Structure formats: structure tokens, C-alpha cells
Length: 209
Image (cartoon, rainbow, N blue to C red):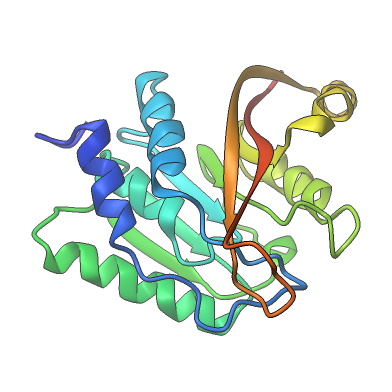
């Protein structure tokens, strides 16, 4: 783990990252809460899934999960996203963190559809679309994640737990850990009526058998 890095310091560093510029509703581009991101990353680090590892951040958006992994000592983070504007924001956020004096492992960038990614990793971190706008988008992400790395951390609506357990069994994987959160969705689009809407979201750790 990076020297002098604590869970609270990680959350502070992540809270300073730039968010989406004109987020796209179809891609469900919502900023992850920095406290939630830090919590999952910290737990992943304690389980030995971050430090010294090659990480893939699939659908990286603004890069929070991949950057968090680098802050916790990952050797490399591969940032993958098909949205060019979000991708540029992720690059800018990596540069921003470096400019603040943090020493990071290597950052590799792939602006492409995740389904076309051929790069392999040791661990995948992802916060995919929940499948609200594009049906089963979350499952497509999860299928690709399990083909990319033997260990996957993926955020999904908590209500899908039973489905994900069946999915894992069919895909030679098992859910080893689940962390539950009240995920804040901040008003980002014109149709939003509440400043913050909280939903039940869980981060699932899956491991190939």
C-alpha cells in the first residue's frame, strides 16, 4: 500500500477528481461517491487485490476506480471507455493526481468499446450501467470482466443479488464478498426532480473458479 495512504486520505483524493462534462443519460453516467469508492478500494487492498497488481477499470468514466487503485499501489491501471469526453477527463484526472505529488504506477488508456478489449488484467474494477436505459448492459460488462481477469469487483443494484448468484454459477465464478451501500445519484439531468436520490447498490467481488 502506498506509504502514508489511509482510507480517509484516499476518499479526499478521489473527491477532488473532475466529474462528467455533459453526462449522457443513455450511458447512465453518474459520478460515484468518493467515500463509497474509497471503501471498496480499501477492502480490495486488504484482500490483496490491489497492491502490485495490473488493474482494468472497465467503463472507467472519469477514472475514479482506476486512479484509486494506483493510489493504493497498483503496478498498472488500464482505463477503458468508449466515450471520448469521459476518457479525456480520466486522463486529466490522472495528471491532476500526479501534479499533487502522488506517485502512481503506470496508467494505460484504451478509448474503445470494452467488448473489443483484448488486454488481460489480474483484477477488474467496474461501475457499469445498471441496465436501466440499455437492458442487460450491466451483464455484458460482467461477462467481459470475467473474461478479462480472474477477480472482479462490480457494482450492481442490490436487488439483483439472486440473479448474479445464478449468473456466477453459470459462468464458473463465485461471489465471495458483497458490500452494500445507499448509493447517492446526484441530479445530473433536466428530468431529475431531487438534488440527490439514493438507491440500494452493492459491490460484488467475483472470482473465477
